[in-house]
Image (cartoon, rainbow, N blue to C red; front, top):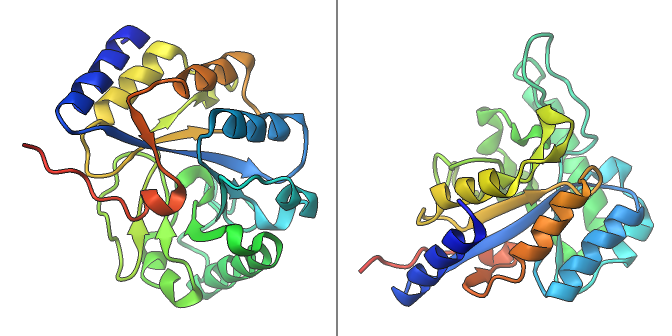
Amino acid sequence: MNWTRFEAELARRRAAGQQVACWWRDDDAAAVLPPFRQLLEISRKKKIPLALAVIPEAAESELFRQLHPQVTVLQHGTDHRNRAAPGEKKTEYPQAEPIEAALARISDGLGTLQKLAGRKLFPVLAPPWNRVRKDLLKKLPAIGVRGISGYGARPSADPAPELRQVNTHVDIVAWRQGKRFIGEEPALAKALQHLGNDEPLGWLSHHAVQDAAAWEFLERLFTLRDIRWLSAAEAFSYTAPAHG
């Protein structure tokens, strides 16, 4: 899969009345460093809405003063601490932890972001490592969380009453290969796999660790004409067009 083929598929879908809808989430926001400023500048310059997943306990107050109007804040856990037992996959919300403790921590993090981000906060939990125990989901709306965002094809649009799930599908960082860019061909091929699903195609970046090739890919991606870029609020209220 190369850019020419990918753009041709986007154009074909648009001509058929099925323009591809995408959204962009960036994880692990906390410090106001040069990569963070670069992230905001690309979003501003290209006029692409950005869903910024912020770690509440680590976030600098200056971060929120830097945000431009097209940036929405999501909750990226609370402390981003791995609590998994030995041998388990990384997670902030292990099954062995009392559920009340996990809920209290999420609620505290949400409260912190409400104070710091104000009206820029969209009450969606993007759990660290994209993992959250299933029994937490039905309890999240009671503490003010209205959405959940993970990675990969979602099992359900509404995993619990009053809770909407909208995932990302293409992580542009190859974590097991030195945090380098995954490459144009793998990224575009993965995107193509998820086109036509009932949710918008989600792109996932990590500004703090990205290499130059990853930034260049985003710059190119954001020039494509046949994509409709959604804000977080639009993504979480998205209804897929009917196929004729």
